[in-house]
Picture (cartoon, rainbow, N blue to C red):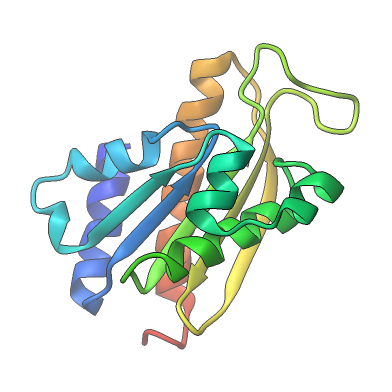
Length: 163
């Protein structure tokens, strides 16, 4: 995880970009991995830990209707979370993560280990994807952090918006 965070930081720094995070099920794990890297203040702008639906609404402008219609663990919500992270920050790149880390809370439609991610560039593309992660709560959260960081790296490496 440390090496991936270093790679993300090096890429963002080389492009002069800042990152914001919007986290739910990871509880700030992505921001923690990032801030373990010395000098990350050059490329990490801020993190939002929005564990509750109210926090998602207040801090990231996620619409109540979206939460009611789709649930917090959904593509629509992470897309609104990542847009909100960009809107409420000075960052040019953002990521969002929301899921069910377990051991409880899962349903037939959204079992434990269901995690939605979104990555976005300010005034650019937004990518979202759903993953199912096996393991205990800690495993799910740690793997989600890795997926979130890899998504940032992939987004900035493959985007014509920042090239």
